[in-house]
Length: 188
Length: 319
Ligand code: SF4
Ligand code: SF4
Image (cartoon, helix red, strand yellow):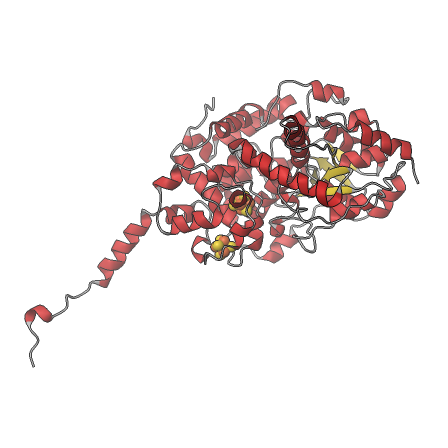
């Protein structure tokens, strides 16, 4: 018996398929999240252990750890960039401690922040904190010193606040980090 | 990847056990500007317990989560490493009463020891200011220094006032516990911590287990992103403390938890959402009061009143 011409299945070029899949993956959020520090992202089995103890899940934030990981794995992007959940993560690492697959979900949260920063999708308070870190060496900084005086301490603490050389050192460090490349704050 | 063995090899700079205990007092931002009474408490209790303190002149923010950690690993670790260098150069470890500083500095150290790429990147940056971090100096937590290096016996001997008859709700705080992998000292069960409870018991108080003992206080990123959710979380825990323990006092191991429970109670009371008031202290403040230091100096900054409980402690004497 002879096979009809049209019955012959087309030859599948495996190299081409692999390349196409690679290109698709390159564009994916998941690759960026891995690059930004969540190396074990792909090991997630969606067991939900991390969500069961996450303060964000408990207080009703939209994209808490397990759900964010799922969304990243299915390739969502725009919806995630619009949501501030990663900026509410308290970095408690309950999720890291409990995850049976060593995914370190906190690193996924952090990587998501790092991805959002590149899109300038970050809260004003975060920019303020960075600016204050650069200007004073303290992310939380107060000019009022009544409390220090009240408890009998010198107004100036022994930090970058009273040490110009140390502050310049810190500024030099910050100028040589990715913060300077991003141009989020003036770094004169 | 560097092996675990290398991580533990670099574990300590205080090699000679016989040497007098000495630590670099790492202050961070919140203690320095918001709760300097916690700083003053540390400056009083440690020298009295035979521990020498170094000021780590020129120290900065640890850096906290919303800053460099949200940008990239090398920048985070470089700022942390500069702080750690201030101790390493003097052959001492750092010591903090703020859980965020404790976590940020130790997570950064863990990353640098585990990943030579990060360590090299950091040291390239540090070279520009003439520094190099070798991974030796780490950051210790005040509660662990008191528990392990000084010991409950010495604490018992050092106090002038005991807390007999008082019930304390302890708040160890998230970054005292997790991720346990990165910390120099670890609870046997990080989901059932006992160190802070035993420290409180050493002062004569009861410090029982309660169901929300390990819950988050809700400060930090959660509070700055959505205050209402943060307050709701804190309210849940406060109500649990009231119902299950009817505690006389909340004692935290972290300056940020101290701020949160102190602030939030006042706010919730004003809004008519709770009708009780439980004073909040950091453990170092409670110990300082029990050791006889001036409460105005070591516990003088709060919004939820502390006067009554302090009066009760001082009137009780040593029983
Ligand atoms: S990150 Fe870990 S704990 Fe969370 S769902 Fe995935 S496997 Fe489970
Ligand atoms: S670190 Fe963040 S994501 Fe993980 S449990 Fe804590 S709040 Fe949730």
